[in-house]
Image (tube, rainbow, N blue to C red):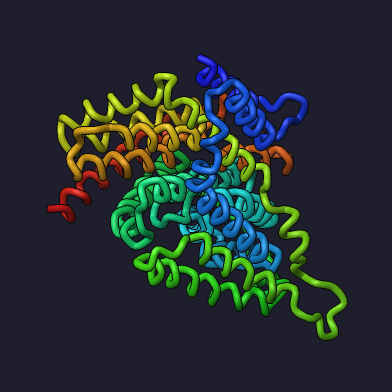
Length: 436
């Protein structure tokens, strides 16, 4: 089966990256092989582009917004406020940073949260004189919460965007289901993280060595505009959802607005704090290429048995009711994400559920949302489960704080299952309450 072989080899290349091959290059090579071997007909490519263009452009827009705000000092300003509210107590600072990570992940996406917040938090803790063991607990929490709380909005995770696009779920309808579920995911994440790192979060840190939050703001105009743009974008998502306006149109307008503000005339300033050109250059184009390429590779699996297995498993689970459909499909997607990365997993799940016949409207809806939950939380089991985790590990390695796979597995295998179970249970309970 060439499609399955291509899929396995592509995932292997993405994980190991021989000769510094980028994840985008690996995925595009897999896509080219899929078309060359006939696993995917080139006539299907326009159809596939019709499914992925909105998620792809939305993702780019969110990262551009994040990078503009980062250059303006937005994230360091927020982290410094958390540190001051913590008052030198690690026990008090820990939940504050978890909440900050959850908020950034919800509004700006999990990849942006990991890419930008991780180095900010690490630098802040070093400046505050926190010992390495204590600092590591906070950094691990920041990376963990970015994925586990990326459920509330369509824009919070690339997997959400792809699923919502595939099943035509409007922004407001998605938020009505997953918003409350995300609150449970956040509470479970905070409880599990605090219990696991209870000794390290007791450590003290020095507030007096940190500068005032206002000093972190490098471009006050962009900084202030960021609040308004984010609020307007969130309102626009809900207002335009009934009109069928693509999510990428709203995100793109918000990103363009901030870029224009950042590129305004200097008026006496010698240098720009925010460089629009550098923001565009620093956007994660490798991830964009990865998403486009992997969709083609996964589409080739339609006739390779894996999608059919997922579809049959979902049908069997749904035949046992709402709870079985939710917990079973969510767990299946979580395990698939852990071993094959969550982006391919959510695509396999979406295609499989689309072809799963005989499900009731309620169990189908539960399975669709459970697939998203599994693909957002399940990746935390292993270092290769999500792009956010791979980015997080790369950022830490570049900062001189490498995390071994053994250490990561020790955390992931203990922390993830209880959060995953609590979130899936909340999803089943919430659907049971709100659906007739």
